Structure formats: structure tokens, C-alpha cells
Image 1: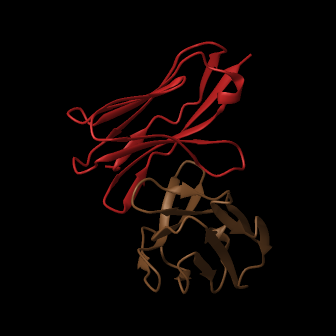
Image 2: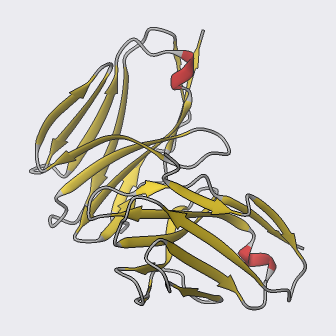
Image 3: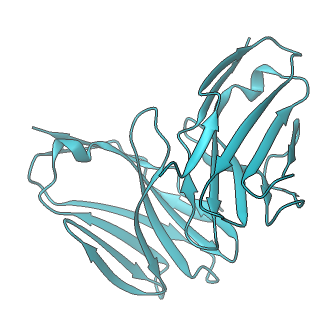
Length: 109
Length: 110
């Protein structure tokens, strides 16, 4: 069983839609949870970063962590064509990081 | 505000050749990491360092060596390149949480 599971998609939505991206994990020791956005031929860019359970909002982006269910989500409101990218979830315990394989998102104008 | 800088950005090697990838960070981070990213397999950790002069093996270390002689630099070496090492290589650094990535080195081994 992989440490982190993420649906690879691809996911295609119309502009303005609400997007929900999700990951599950198996290691209850994870304390830090991250979402990265990766554009084609670029490195992962940190989008959201949360510690333990709860919600965090930053503009159109909301990250949710449910440690009891070992489930994290990223919501994108009013999606834009510029949001088209691959989204990676990541989590860590100590200085070791574990990544999902990424979900490819396309927002159609 | 450079962050994490990787050189070179692209490289083509022949089987058996050697090369070194350079990662430099200007954030004074203690931890540095080398990953490879392959389609459908996500990011896989090759080697990492928890401080100057230290290195440790990750998930896929075979065929690679690393050195961290200076805190700001982390070098990844391929001693005898193989076609299976064709990949995109990413360096990351952190002061604990979270990691910050460079833009990668695209390496093709013919």
C-alpha cells in the first residue's frame, strides 16, 4: 500500500467551476500537509500548507485536513484557465516527505 | 529572490558517461533533497541531506551519489549513466516544513 494515494485524473472543468482535489494516506504520524501546483516543464510550487487537522483558506483556495479519516482536500473556487496544471498533495512526518502522483486539471474557457 | 536554482536545465548523455547536477539554495535551509519524477510514478526521493557534510539514502539511491560540502549546495552525481536514469530531476530544500523546489533538470540518456 502506498503512503499517499491520489487520483491522477485527468480532470476537466469549465471556467468558473468549483474544483475538488483529494488525497488519502495511511500513516497516522503525518502532521504537515501540503498542496503543490506544477505547471508543465516547471517545478512544484507550494500552494497551501497546513499543520494537523482543520481548514485553511487563501483567496480562491481552501485546504482541508481530516486526520480521523486520513483524508485531505483542496478546493478551488471560481476556477480559471490559469489554474490548469498538475496538483500534487504532500505530507510529512519529521524531515521525510511523501507525495501523491498528482492530479492533472484542465480549466476550459 | 532566486530560491532553489538547478543547473543545467537540460542535458543529453550517452550510456556510460558521467555528470553532476548542481542545486543551490539561498534560503539558508538545513535540509536538501534530490528527487526524480517519472510519468505515473510521482516524485521519488534519491538522496537527502540534513546539514552540511551529511547525506543519506532515499527510496531510489542506486546509481547516484551526492555531496554537500557547502550548506547552500547539494550535488547529484551519475557515475555511469544508464537509459533507466532518463528522468526529470528536482532539488528541494527546507528548514523543516515545507519544501521548496527548483525548476528541474531534464536528463536524457541515449
